[in-house]
Image (cartoon, rainbow, N blue to C red; front, side, top):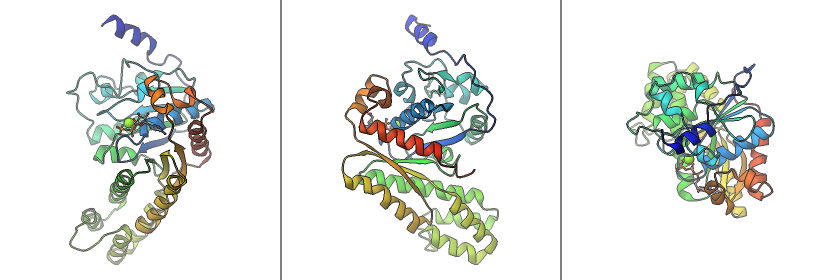
Length: 325
Ligand SMILES: Nc1ncnc2c1ncn2[C@@H]1O[C@H](COP(=O)(O)OP(=O)(O)OP(=O)(O)O)[C@@H](O)[C@H]1O
Ligand SMILES: [Mg+2]
């Protein structure tokens, strides 16, 4: 081990102060968005710090093994262990991956890969990982997701019904956010449906060009109701339970702020689902400075507008009941 790595390993050793055993499972908050570079990692880092400073026990997990950088935003230079060790079966105990951060109550599971040949977790390993994450002694487990709509990313988003969607006020981000929601929603539906025929119908509807002409979830619902009314009722339940939460990041104008409301209304009209507009975060030139200095913005410039908005989103998250109770 190089001297530098030894120094870093000593600074960022696995957590020594084992948190108390949780009385109830942590709230899982996956943070996705479809598009890259919209601020998912920035939002996770700052929400994690804000929630911890409010007195909650928080674990921030970098689930983006393709481009891990959450550890950097939280001040950890070279994590000695990471989720990649769990994926490669080098470590079975997630508790041993918890790294201390400089913020009391906040632990980090990094996503760095020392071996690029380490595979991405397959479905079975992901299910196992999610089960273990739910056992962590924490109040909140935040998952920083990668870009895109790979089934792995979408699966992580579905660990709860109220995942957080980060959207930047630009058409490409909005477009990708809808595509991401659509993928997550259909995947969720397919898992929820018991009947084979109905599941096949959902699979068919996942193809926007399908020959039955099912273009929206509401049209799919009509077809399912005709095929099997009890599955139709189940479909409606699943739709109601799914309550993604929206954060608009890098807001510069009043128009940008309004975007959250229009996304919410498109979700209702197109998907028949009630998204929640949790809040927005202003564009802040110090955000890049914060990343360069490996400090979250809420610590670097706690009185800035963006920090106030981030803390407001954190407070709302803490106050809201989780969708699955
Ligand atoms: N509110 C903001 N104001 C200014 N810059 C921001 C803001 N939010 C994020 N940024 C900057 O945008 C860049 C991308 O942010 P970030 O890495 O969090 O995106 P991401 O969605 O996680 O990307 P990826 O999908 O590649 O992981 C960073 O340099 C970050 O500092
Ligand atoms: Mg990221």
